[in-house]
Image 1 (spheres, helix red, strand yellow):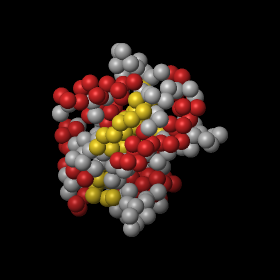
Image 2 (image 1 turned 45 degrees about the vertical axis):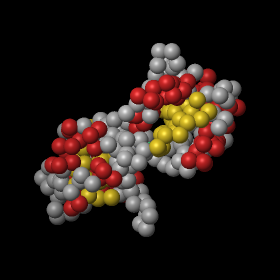
Image 3 (image 1 turned 135 degrees about the vertical axis):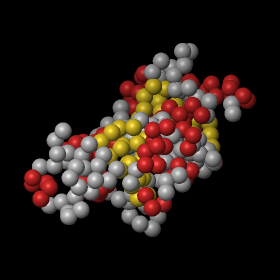
Image 4 (image 1 turned 90 degrees about the vertical axis):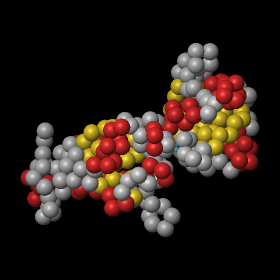
Length: 265
Ligand code: SAH
């Protein structure tokens, strides 16, 4: 285990502990507190400090004693804390000997920047543990009655960010290739650019009648689901006023929701 180097420890503050505390990169699951892992719940209770943003949802954030909470995702009113500042804060707290939970919605390693945080912690000699969470990429469709794979409908699933502009040359999501897989496409952060990537998929030859579902605030008390097709889903989104956080599920699996809906609790 490599500790801080002399150069690093010389500029640490007077409170620096002999050995750094551990940082737990904890996934909170999609929002229902009963979907926290037993381990996540224990760590939330035992940590000295919990750095979080809004995505874990009001119910889970409400479980954290107020004096332990550090909201690093403030937007309304305050600025959003930069990733560099969050990284630095994790190291600072750990060097004070604190047990730190970095709580992320879903799973920290699925579009959660947990990988960057792990690299930063390792580079600074801070021990960390990854605690998996239930990702909204699977649970979001699931609680809407949509399995991301199905023997009759999809033998692969892709998780992609909808945040990028599909018309940009440097877009790292290859929508043409995704359209060609015939598998399920699950888009995270995909409410705003829904018109762009549904167009990109149609341009790539995907059937405009392909079922699409939007699952907003999956497992939260005020969860909503809206369904349509590749052709209609933008209008459906607008009519329903769907807002982030929401998952977009594209593929034949989305059509199976109708069959199970009546018995879905
Ligand atoms: N690490 C998270 C994803 C973070 S990216 C995970 O594994 O779930 C943020 C995106 O996640 C949101 O824009 C939305 O697309 C999705 N998301 C997270 N929680 C959600 C929820 N409860 N309901 C619907 N979408 C959710």
